[in-house]
Each structure stands twice: as C-alpha cells, then as structure tokens.
Length: 59
Image (cartoon, rainbow, N blue to C red; front, side, top):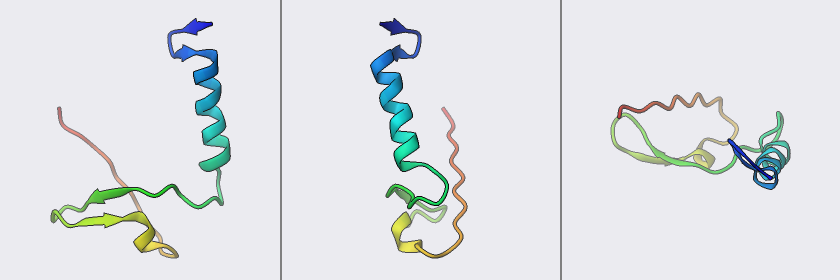
C-alpha cells in the first residue's frame, strides 16, 4: 500500500534496519568521509575512541 513515505514494506524495512543496526550499544555502520583538511578517513579507524560526527551541506 503506497504512502507519502513509500510502501508499507519499504517503511518496515527501514525501521527493521534501524532496530537491528542502529541501536544503542551496537557497533556503528562503517562510513568513509573526508575531514576538514581533505584527508579521507574510515570510522573504523577510530574504534574505541569517542567520535563526534557533524554532517552538513550547502546546496
């Protein structure tokens, strides 16, 4: 059944992903990014450390 946010199946799939992978105490999904100096990094390189991610955009 279509809704403004997709089908009910798509909504359920997104919710299940959050429950299974993004819960408190779970290992964060791997991400790759670029720091403010243009150096690439992976989140896993900082395992065991406190990491603050701030994402923003300008478009």
